[in-house]
Length: 441
Image (cartoon, rainbow, N blue to C red; front, side):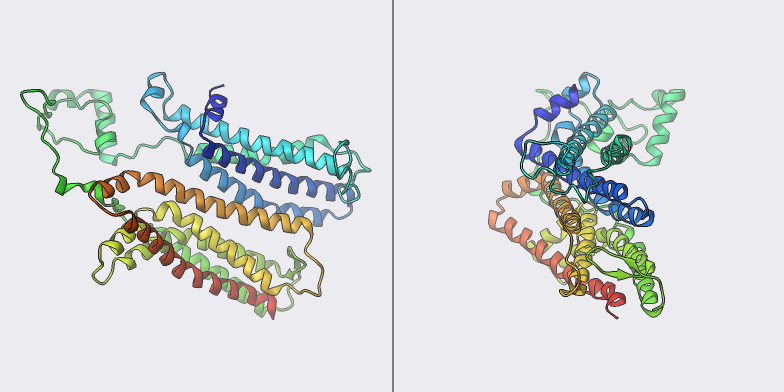
């Protein structure tokens, strides 16, 4: 009930994002059901049905990634003092977020089932009754357990992924965690130091040293010192403690994928495997494409951090310094979705350059899958950008309070976008040309 009340009480923008998750789940569920229909109508082609089901894993992954991005930006399930006072801590709010994600994906799966039954002709009274009866095996009974199993994949995977990613973590250093455990077991620190108030470390990221007296609370006789306007540390985005560590691994995986594709180009006698859009290639080409996509996703945060560092090189001014600091601080948040968009764009560009207009036309299911994957990746990137904007709202407010003009903030945003486009654009084209090389020769 709490998940339903938080779902209905959200703002229109949040409801729109959840509705988009439902639509993405509906499209993925419809593709899975069409795969089931093909398996029913062609019982002798077991390998073809398995290949179609394997190609559905890409829309499933894109939908789950988009659902996770929407769950991370949901303001209704963030820890708040009012909810913590009634026992809804981070763990229970994580469960509420996972339940809300499952509800959105289940709604989309039910829409996919209704549309599938309508195209089969099982549901009448609406336009296009039975329009795809031959393709969806309308003459054979639909195995309900298999259909429900396929429709339950996206809600189950999405909710479990949200629960694992958003589970409560202790961000304190290892020494602080050991000290807290020692205090809870033996009470040794109660005799030598004054006990800190609950939540002081998590709220202020500070800890008193041993023997240091606790600061007295401000009173009328001893008021708190006024902050110095010239020393406002929140005016600039905080730098990350260290750069993302995935850049070397991402470059290694990307190089391995391109090497596998080059090896497939040299081995011309490899058996062909059908690809979406009427293409054909060796199975090693598919492995190379997969490794290339994974490498771009892993290297995305490191490349974004590097882009921000390059913006601040060679005596930067205030504009380049602000844009570079923001990119470095948000590299982990927007880098991975940006790398996935780069991988999808390179794959789409490679398929478009290889497609022969004289060959077979691209089917509706292939078009639906391509649109679904592209839309989910772009929506995930935009959602991550919105999350990053909300995360630096305090920094933006501090800059405005210090007198920064609004044109400077917009110029910094445009500079960040231009720098990312200048780095990831040529990289996407190069990866697309190298990915299309094995199939063009």
